[in-house]
Picture 1 (cartoon, rainbow, N blue to C red):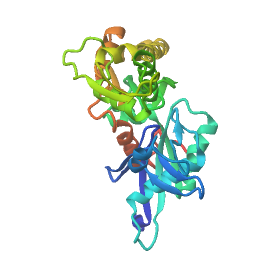
Picture 2: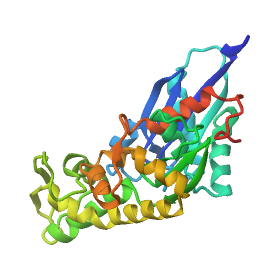
Picture 3: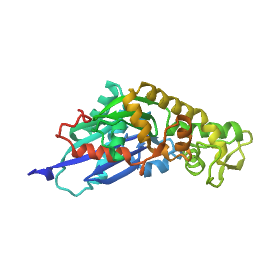
Length: 340
């Protein structure tokens, strides 16, 4: 393409927890989806990791906003500023012109028309000339190397920050799917609540996130248990500082309710699956992607529950973004999974 330098092509996985941008098959931005805004002027102070470090530590003139809730845009202006800021990270100042953008953005499979329009508008306001969309479970399937246009059925369970996307894909389309709003953020909330009720200790979102990463588990018995994690914080009764060791078994108990909802949703989708595709899924297994796939023992728990082999994808955090990147390469080829 002559003038190809005038068009910049980006694939964006706009996630509740993290936003990843891919350009030329490379991950160029991988930052938490969070913005710090000056309350007085409305200007953006920081984006991504810098803003995350401010989260929960700001004074009254600064607010930190997570523009996405449950996988969809909750704060339109903040989302636009975040997308714009992250695109700027790729194009540092000093270029004498800004190339026009062509973007592929992935969205939850259960998005309503209004939510889809919000994503499209945000991308256009941030400077994109052409915006294509792809559903998250389809992107996840592409990203882990499944041939989605083949007549075989494959099931993908993508546990993100705000939503868990479960879908059966075949022949380049989604045959049956379900999007539930129980995911990584809910696990974090469960841990905060558990620490408050069981240990009388108040912890913030970031500490709960750390607990989830260090000792989070889906099973109460693990072959290789992680070491206990020490939590520091104020006692709710006395407001004096306390230190409490937390082990993975406690966390497995406190996450149990949310994980049961995920299991129930997977069972629902399997019930809707046509028998020929169901046979394919039993043979191929189920693929787990997204940050939630990193929860210790989750694959084993689901395998035991469903009697179908559940496999964690190789790079679960980047599967959706990579799939969105593959979608970007196929613009104009008439693939069924891209839409505008």
